Image 1 (cartoon, rainbow, N blue to C red):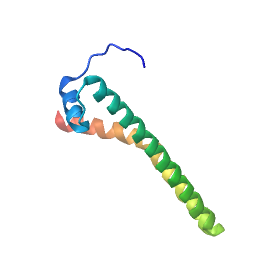
Image 2: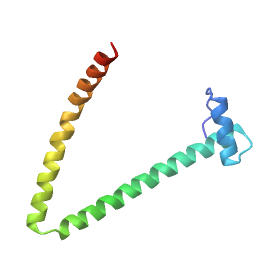
Image 3: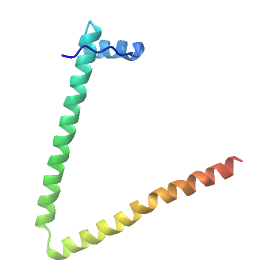
Length: 99
C-alpha cells in the first residue's frame, strides 16, 4: 500500500465511518475506495449483460423490424446531435427572461 498525505472532508469522512462501521480514517477511506471499485465493476457487468440481451433481441427480429430499428436509431442520433444547440438556446432564453 502507498502512504499518501491527503486533505479529507471531515464531515464526509465521519458520515462514511458511520455508514461502513469503521473505526479509523484509514479503514474508512480504504472501505469507501473498495466500495466504489465494486460499484464500478457491478455497473460494467450490468451494462455488458444489457448489451448481450439487446443483441439477442435484435437478432430475433425480422429483417423488416431490424430496418425499422436502425431507422429509429438514426432519428434518435440526429436529435441527440441537436441537443447542445438547444441547450445554448434555452440558456439564452432564460437569461433574457431574467433580465
